[in-house]
Image 1 (tube, rainbow, N blue to C red):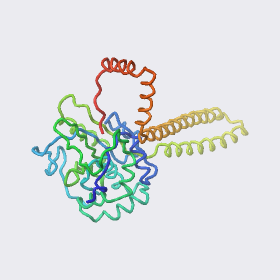
Image 2: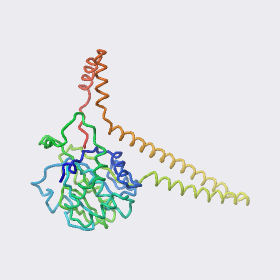
Image 3: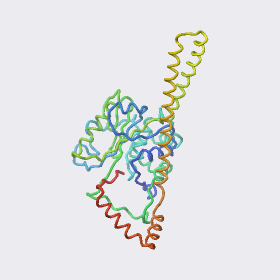
Image 4: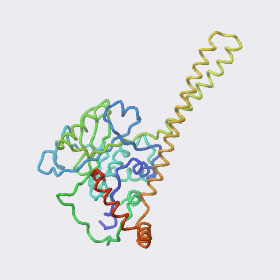
Length: 349
């Protein structure tokens, strides 16, 4: 494996990052939403839900029954199932993209994958999981989209120099996904030898909450560094379709209203009331579309900032402040503020 193919950057656990990453791979009408509740009603309100992405602090479990090569995992069983598109992770830092692909490539009949992912799935479908992982490593288009979210380095480093291996005091985080396939709920973790079957589930949105809660319960009390996101249909498209449906209903009722007025019917007031209700519903739907458009605009702006290197700007600003004699007082003031600020945990990556 070439060093170039092995270099995948860390990307931030953020719905805006994941949404743009999916779109840049060529997938349409899909977005990612952060979840703050596991109850099925919350998930149903987002339907269609194609799968969930779960981020957690990785623990070395090689000596426990939950180790990567064990057949039993929490409430599920590691299985060999050709109906599930599963690829082992053989490249560092690729787990975020791999978790996303695990959902998209298993819901291909419901999604417009685009040329890149359609061709990759067609090529890799007959390969074993480890070779699928190797194929992913060597897919230039997917790697380039993933690495487009690399954060600018503060200092220049030798790309051929090996990175310091993680130590015992380092927090390592890992992405996995949950997706329904043929009426069964699967946990797809590229560090395992196969998909984890969590059993039959006619209503997977009801089942998945309990599975994730059990997984979180395996950690020490007080551990809160988890993140959960849902891969769902583009809400702007669904809301626009609802507006179109409401417009048809309004048009039909307006025609009916004209006929009733000509006949001096007593039902005129009832129809007018229904039209007023539909107009209110339409206004609410338009408001929701505006909110979604605003959210996507923020995603684009935030993602553009993530890709900018602010180091030269900060350097020039600090230099100008030093020349004016205001840098040192500003640094001391910042130190005082930092002492009084509550300690924050490092964001999960």
